[in-house]
Image (cartoon, rainbow, N blue to C red):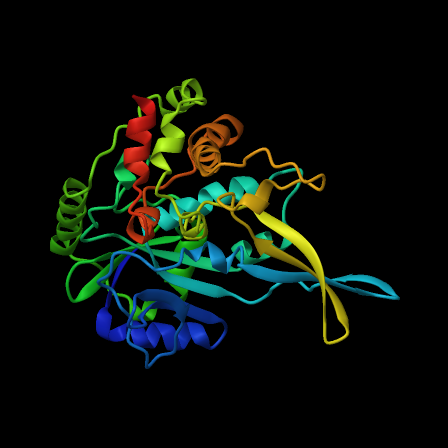
Length: 335
């Protein structure tokens, strides 16, 4: 494990150094929220924010991508993405979500080559939370405001500097490569980091998910599903903003005379998601679709991968136009 501190004033130098051989992505305030986007040395990074509008999974699992082109001479796969990418400022909940996505896309038998290439080329620098939002509940689901799972380096904001701690061999090599920009942390700075992490943890909302898998299984046919979704619009924003949702569809299209095969993210919140070729749809009601989403996150993935695929980021709560709250849904259905 390596420790180092970097002045916020010197982040531009780090960005410039990384950009000579790769890309540096960091948090930038776009006016209507903070986004993870490519930056240059002169850009101003936003370090005081709750989370990105969009989860960073899109950097590894894009909203849509062309995976092959085909014509009279056959099908040609799209070349794998290359080049190192440094992702800076990802919150620990979103980093943890990548650990769960790895279980899906990096399965030993069926690994996704595009996802794997992006993961292998990425250096992830996580930024610990200082002020969790009221909708955050990561500590209830195996998370922490300063969680390290999935990160190569954990950064903690302690005022004028960021204290960096390597988590993986990739992170340690990165800190050694740019060691000239780092200083050795003082005992006071290390102590300040510990105090800040404890303070953020104390502010986190708690949600009881004890036996959630068993309770949801037992309440599969509960009338509460339809009651809870009476005001649901079926817009799918909860699914598209979720950092662990990973459903997709494949389709062929012709653009400019070129035939392409496209993979695009999809959402179980939509009626057409389960529409069969015969015209039959096994999930005709919104309550059934809500039930499937909850069962998938808290039951099916727990049984298949040994993990609940929710990281408590709170995006679905903050962005729902009908003010549905996944924490309340868990509580109501579990009664």
